[in-house]
Image 1 (cartoon, helix red, strand yellow):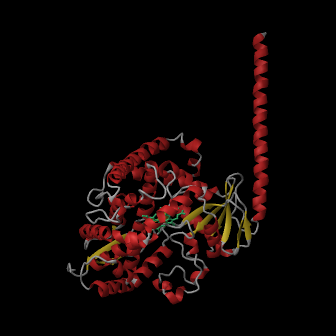
Image 2 (cartoon, rainbow, N blue to C red):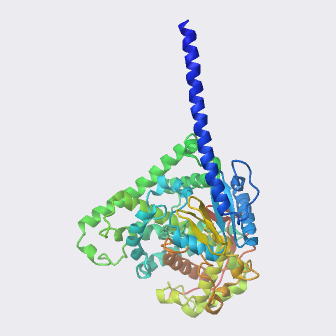
Image 3 (cartoon, protein in one colour):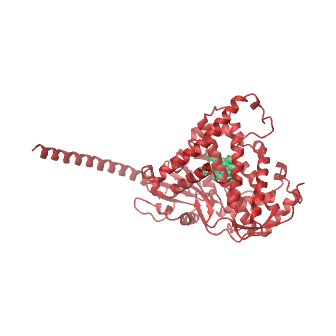
Length: 512
Ligand code: HEM
């Protein structure tokens, strides 16, 4: 008897729970649906690719990374046909896809909060500049900005030159051979430069590329990359059920321990030499690394904050710079006339010597600078920048007010091919960046380093590295290349078959 009553009550209890759950889902659904409809109405002028119930346009991010790039291109083409913008629904979230300079400018100047997708980087980079919430970012960026001033980063030219010479020596093993992927050589070199200048520690990746730290870093990047593009791995609940979650925690720990050790060592040095730190250079004349310069500032950073900033800088600064150099080398190999001009410019500055560039030499590399810019326009290594729209915002070209709560996806790769670049945006033409041809061009038409106050803090440093390394490579070797081929997006933009080039000897360079 009691058992029957208990069973009966238990069934009622379960039914009540189910009814409450159903009601909660319905209320959530109605509220979400009303909000989504309002957002849809406000942006009704924007074209949208065919959507599916519940998932919207999430199929854009399905398939391999080559397919995803193709899908993104089709959104860009849809945008090109309609005042350079479109919209997509990723499940319940509305994103406005922007390929127009004026609209990109408005978003990048006014919406400084990164899109929620960047949250995957938080366990690794914490509140480092790259992912910091806006309030914290504002105060920290103010402190870091002077450290990336031209005058400071120019102090690193000797480090860049030294590693550049190691790079040229390593490339010798490919001399007169068939095609090879140049990116791995460049990446090892930029890692050495960025580590030494950011942390003050010599890593010697070029001679010693396989360390537990580098392996861990690589694994974390692979997992993050997968998470960015595999929508089903995005909810924490699902991700935490996979073995990737454990792998990520273990490898992040290895990278954190590595940077923590350097930070602790530098903290001790700083405490010991407080007085000497008042001067700009330590006694032996070596320039002070970014980390050294972060002590004794307006904000007294904790060791954890220092680690987050240094990790963010080394991660944001390395692959980006290496990729631009590698794309530029392939482009120079494909366009022998442009390579000849770069070479002649180098000869006019250095003669037939392997002298390391000074800051004055770098300022004379006008044509090389135009080539690098054209390379960044055509092969925008950070192809997408995503921001959170935290207040309703009016986009002038699209003539649409995007509601707060939506996201904005600035397709830098698409902005770089929009109508402002003329009828042949796919043609490699470095002279687009001649002063007279640039006059009157929209300031946000060229955004490889993003735009506005949350742009790339390391852009001047990046330019110094790119010019210096390309200078010594082009003086040392003649480059040949067929094509860049198909591309894929893995947060950054990569050619499917790598950056394939051949190198031939040019002339024997003298030291002086
Ligand atoms: C050619 C080389 C480079 C390119 C194309 C590049 C591109 C970018 C872009 C597009 C952003 C904004 C990303 C976003 O909002 O999603 C960014 C931010 C950033 N970059 Fe670079 N970058 C380069 C080199 C460097 C270097 C050399 C460093 C430092 C050593 C650096 C450090 C950073 C940092 C710390 C941020 C975050 C800035 C903030 O939010 O305040 N980058 N970079």
